[in-house]
Amino acid sequence: MTEIRLHDTLAREKRVFEPADPKRVTLYVCGPTVYNRAHIGNARPAVVFDVLARLLRHIYGEASLAYARNVTDIDDRIIEAARSEGVDPSAIAERYERHYLEDMGALGVSPPEIAPHATHNVAEMVAMIARLIETGNAYEADGHVLFNVPSDPDYGALGRRDRDSMIAGARVEVASYKKDPADFVLWKPSPDDMIGWDSPWGRGRPGWHIECSAMIEAHLGETIDIHGGGLDLIFPHHENEIAQSRCAHGGAPLARYWVHNGFLSMAGSEKMSKSLGNVVTVGELLEQGHKGEILRLALLSAHYRQPLEWSENLIFSEGQRLTRWYRAYEVLLGRGAWDEEAFPPHDLVIRSLVDDLNTPGALSVISTLLDMAFSLRGHESEVDDAPAMADLRRAIAAAKLLGFLSVEPTVWFRGANEDNRIEALVTARSEAKRQRDFAEADRIRAALAAEGIMLEDGPEGTIWRRA
Ligand SMILES: [Zn+2]
Image 1 (cartoon, protein in one colour):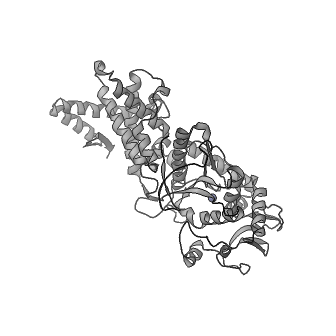
Image 2 (cartoon, helix red, strand yellow):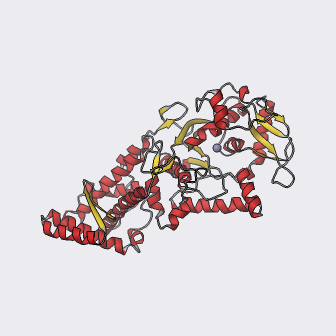
Image 3 (cartoon, helix red, strand yellow):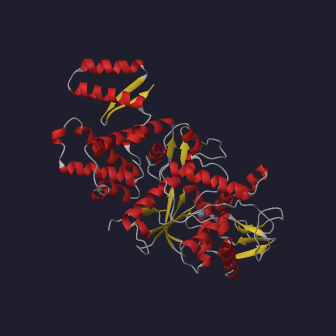
């Protein structure tokens, strides 16, 4: 079986991935808090872990993955939004969960096997909190239940921060009822006019961190194979998840591998975040006419652990790359359809993916292979070089595994007549150059320039852009 290597945040190195049970590989990723539209930075973990899930299903078998991505449908920001609109919190949560699923669907993200909702798992959270009180790791104070951080000597191993920076970084509320400033909330009281659940500590609602620990236990088990999320969740969220679960489970670790994706920033600015106001939502990008598959390609163009700088240029260049893939697909289909089962994803692409999800490597292998398709055009007799054709078909299969080429080329290019015309001229110019008819090549370049279309010749061929 192909070996996957993943960078484990806890071990701080790449490790060979060995699931506890290859017949049931467990993956949990912290999902959305559904109170507004997802921005493109929120989409990065959804797309990255969708690729990891696809790779795990490919290697261990479709039915062998249990991937859970939760929906935080109770949260103070949801309550706030509901109050300002004068509606029930569930109306806000349902609306934005629907948007989230539509937006992620447009980016080719397959629904995970399990999508647990916080409001459906409150009993499990209450049970886990009760256990933490029993073990001496949590205490009740002033209607709240708090996790006592000093009760867990191993607290902080994931982020390896010192205690002062953890307290400062968590911006934890300094409340008089806390035994220690680092203690965090497991349960908080709800006034009568606010959404709440009955508990041994009075009517209230859960804190955010306990949600993930309780749902992982309920849906996947005490120790899972992979826990994923954005880098910004390491502290305090994942540190707190680890502490809660380990203390509730007699020391059993929460996850055997921790995988975190890097930040997304807008070109020329800092990390994209709502508080900085430099946010572009997935919905806005789709409304501007950007195709979801191009946005997906842009999100996977950098390695998942690296920062990704988002820009119009990135969308443009990835759009050109995807256009070339679809052109190649069209050329191949032009030679007749094939049995897709007989052509599994190309080994070179899989080899990149299993190396800590090296998507830039995988995408460039696909591009290199598919560029060979263009040499098939107009050379009917030389077509049936069987190994080359197999490579091309397997490159198509690899692109599909990664969530690309999801429609027929005819569908993709529908409405793209203008682009087609330009593509045809660019191709005609390349052909003229190949035949050393430089006068014709220059004529086409000048004609396109007059329309504001600029050409750039590179080792991968010619790309064009509107000036
Ligand atoms: Zn979580």
